[in-house]
Length: 274
Image (cartoon, rainbow, N blue to C red; front, side, top):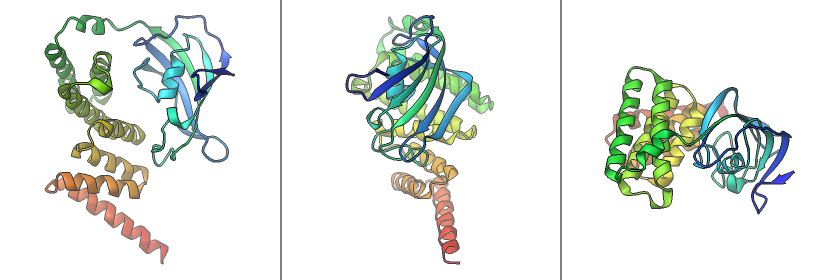
């Protein structure tokens, strides 16, 4: 077993060594994986993407941090099992209801094709921040057009491309306010796509990412609440929707979702008492 991080937060068991190109920061690694939570008893499957390759930009935390760090120690053809402690997985918050707080993660990870840094990032280096953000906005608008046409996978790709560009240019800690606002809108758009595709865990992930940067986004709180409803997590749904209602008390969609969740909770309580 290898230590990926000095403190042992991420450990790696190599099942197969590849001989292809190494994964480097900002390169695109095509991966397949299964995620298990190990909080109680036997590992329980929480996410599975092992039938098709998923393109991930390495080093930009498009997957949980511990998996991202391990990815940078791998190469094309590698197949490993990772053990990721909570601090580099979902932390004290977890990802309800699938991942409880302070849960360790077991990940079966395989790396396929590895692409070098996308030429688009190189082309954007010479742009001013204003020109760069205008370019990112143009990609977001392409995503909006795809969304309106119900080409949801194309919309997801556009929104992810725009987010990838933002991450290649700015660190979260020193991202200018205009870029932060743009990132929040992109995450809300991406959450809407995942909601249409009924990938509610992905909706939760997008919303939590956005709210960590701007907790005042009513749209993200609303979409997070709706995703929790679909996942059957009524308590978290009510908290998220109540927050959205405080931010936009006149919003009819928020009110409708709140009425729905309250009715569901009342029905559940009545069933307990016969």
